[in-house]
Length: 116
Image (cartoon, rainbow, N blue to C red; front, top):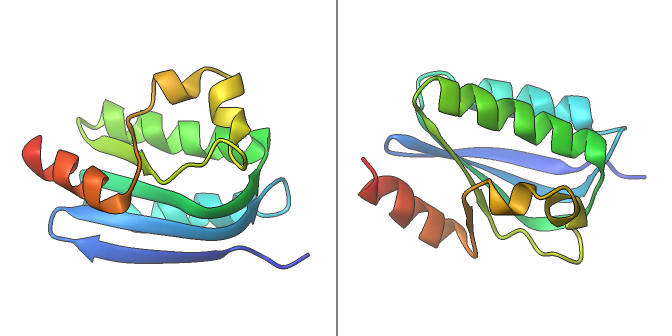
């Protein structure tokens, strides 16, 4: 199984973390490390899940942990491009109703910029 590809791209006060591939128990630490690397000095983070083919609850736990950290630090953590077919865990657990979710990175960037 191939490891997911993760990238970090700064956008002014925001940072976009894009994921391509599967997020599961074998890649959760890699996701955690990438989100931790992206967060210092940025109070707004966008997690682009448009390239995710599968996500399990271990990856979901990593996402929730970083979302809570951002919010506790008066920041923002937004999800972009999550497709139900591949990221069902967000909906099954009810987190899709609690996490700020947008159809695209552009929409999330616009929301993050407007909120500043």
